Image (cartoon, rainbow over all chains, first blue to last red):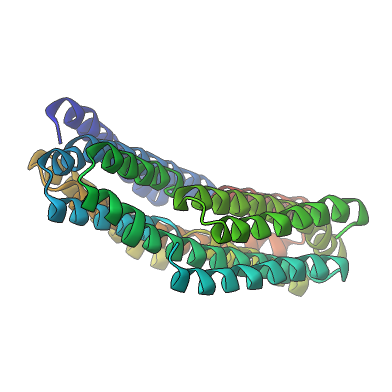
Length: 91
Length: 91
Length: 91
Length: 91
């Protein structure tokens, strides 16, 4: 990951770590289930944003590298990885 | 889509069309909501299988063509389309 | 389903049936995979709207009936069905 | 949440916190994007298991309480919360 993209991503993950701890605290304090579930949804939404950023960086960087290199085997690998990922995301 | 892949895909869609009609019939016959919802889930699962097949064909065919051609612009387009799709599937 | 809710739902399903046929036609006409996939996504989005309507009607009608009746067994069944559905939707 | 259900849930969250830290470490170590994305998927899958457990406990406990109490307003609230959640999960 490029350095300028890495920092915001790490910050997001730091915040997510705190959110996960927050969910644990809610359970310890015996907070209402639905509130806890809403908080878990927020964590999942934050993780999706991290995924989107990693994916964008992957496209701009690794994939671009495979294209620029003209290396057909590398390109095929990159495509297959994305198609695999699509299969898993699409559920 | 290659002809040998097209037929099973069209058959699946024919069946899905019938399933959608089946859902409508269930509503007309005033069937129990949860049963109707289960049937809608089955339609969505069947559509996902169609998506998987189209995607596999896309990888084996269109993407492979872009790689074989060595056309960097075409390759970039193909990658961006997949990354876009990933963003939409990942919700 | 209440009659006034049933009609818009049946209309939606009629349109979805047409959309599914449209996807089949796109494949027969050998249209571009990504365009076909986008169309399948549209069908899935339309199905989700149908699900939302059925669910809202279920809450307003069947669930309300179980509450008004004061029948604890019926209420328990209704809750368990929703929780089951949640487990399946949350994937 | 009942005490016997709380402990496994807190353990899971502890592990998830570690997994999130692991994702950050992977980014710092400049690990391959697709491997990072796979790890994020694992975190999301682990969160879904936490959700399922909270939901099961909610059904067995809060919802059961609303049914046993015979309080129609409380029951209506509990149902509406679940239906809301369903709408958000079903995307």
